[in-house]
Length: 224
Image (cartoon, rainbow, N blue to C red; front, top):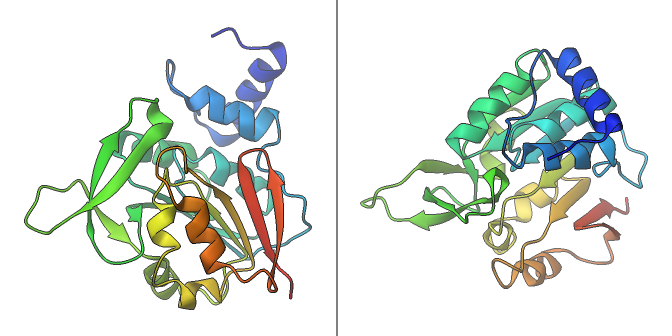
């Protein structure tokens, strides 16, 4: 892939700033980097100042790094299940004291998860639940658990890009954590798993949330 001069300059700049190469050659890392740092894909049409951010489906940490610059006073919890992505996430964020990396799959309950490679590149790993007697790759983590162990009062920004697992996340056990969230940024994956959008619409009360759409991302902000 031939990179534009702008992309090359920004990649070198941020690599030096974060003391990491940031991307792995021959992977989808460069596409994520360009979306986040070149095209402004994670900029929000909102003026917010979150004290806690949860980056679910953090991949290699590029969005978490962007948030750490944009919201320097925020505490960021980055959740990623797949081992090779998580290793790069740790490398990319090792100099950022406000980022905590958690290797787990975000789910709606305590469970054991199997990781499935959808053959769409490093950004396309999905998870599904298996029972305790089956072989599993990773344990699940719930938002309620993250809230509890990190003593979180409110989640100022919840970013979710979990390759279809949002269907389960939005389908049950959401009342407690949802009441503590101010802004949700979610990429829905109905193209991989039918019912993701329906689950979100069933969970959200339109009288309490404003909705914005930016590219593939749905942005929900609490009206209060």
